[in-house]
Picture 1 (cartoon, rainbow, N blue to C red):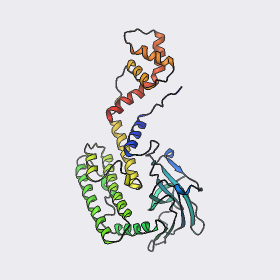
Picture 2: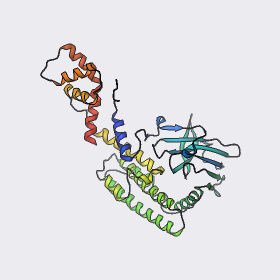
Picture 3: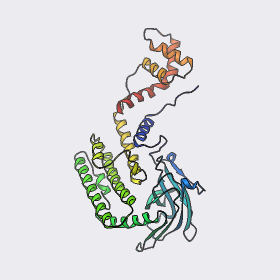
Picture 4: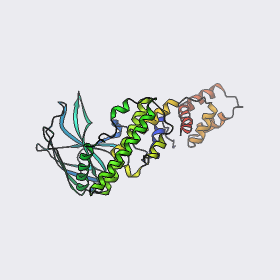
Length: 364
């Protein structure tokens, strides 16, 4: 007997968003334990992995809770799952890490911090870089105790792009667009200033993209880097809009128009390797969940409706269900107390599912 799986409201929301975004249905938009794949060093298929070797020596102690422990982290561009890869260094800082990778995308180098009895592996990002399957690379990271003289250098097939990106990031850090939008602005967004905030974000994005245009015209650069720098800036702005919207507990009926006007898309194929795009999809999911929950009301339904739903959605259920479902739909037939009890026991598990499906169709 084959029975369809019954889904929760969150599953409906999540699958809908993932289909819209072009991800697989097994994607996790949350950084919860179930959505994180933590890997031990292993030997992987070279066509679906990248090996990074090099040296990490960070002498600057930014906090007494900072540990001399580092990880590579990324959200898989094909399924959205957060992957954390431990970096096993020797006493000199040398390491080799082989990690699975399905597409060219950004990787984060993170330092681990101690938080009470817990280890926070995603708390502090050192920097981001690009990696691709089969494109093995070398990384040299040195940060002296006084910060001045920091060195981030790459070698390998993507060495040129990553070294050019470091120069671009340093230039961006010295500009007025670092950050593009201050985080504290999103915290102050309310209903009466949201429109002004949205206009400000749009203006800052246009100015930031203008900075990129001017910068990349002045230097000889890999075209992929220019494309991804613009992508990163667009989804930086998108995340800040969603952050303001979420904090203000508002609904913006013109949000998708804003995205379209600013080159932001829920299904941006070029952006799938970008870390901020992955965050954007995750945040948009939570905005959708909030809107769904705000508008959800349990509808009034009858057992006859439940019977029709079960008969249509679960045609492979055993004959006992099917016979009762058909009988229940006929409201002119009086049911015995035994039948009513049996009906209640058999069909009660489907009531909440049916109610959810009604609202799901209305919402989407």
